[in-house]
Length: 173
Ligand code: PRP
Image (tube, rainbow, N blue to C red; front, side, top):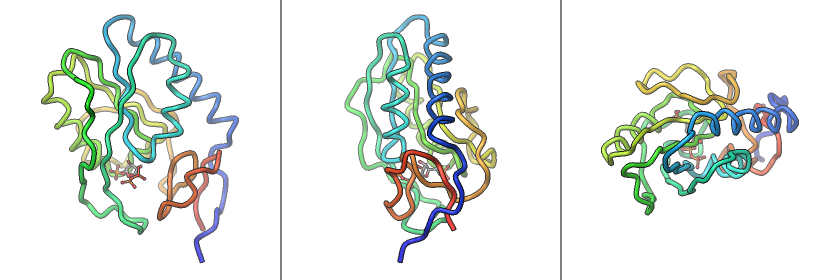
């Protein structure tokens, strides 16, 4: 049997409101230049698709695939790059979109890698941030919500690939 949802942490309405605000913040932060919104799969797929529809300026979208967790609820400590974006990063504002910053291991490694490709700027937008990321030197410029240090699912976040589709964010039993 799979695990069950314990408590709703962020409702659909709270998420929708905050994503709208983040879209406005991002629009204001990039008055000029080319903007590439880079979604880190799979967890960011719902957040990214909602977010880009609230960014009122031209932009491009591409994805990165990295994996740091197995089927358990504790980070394994390894990050694997399974898909590298085909879009050119050089000279563009890169906004890396992540569902959650937990240990920061995934992002820390990716930021180092992407920074070597000559972007005009490189920033992180995370829907959720646990503020326990000791392995991330780069500050997270755009944060949706401060998250409790629990295992969270929904709105793209999974447990063993389940729960990604639920429209709110919840903690697990
Ligand atoms: C999860 C989550 C973040 C990352 C956060 O991804 O979506 O990308 O871990 O953890 P960290 O801050 O400790 O690195 P996962 O590797 O489970 O892949 P997924 O996005 O496909 O769910």
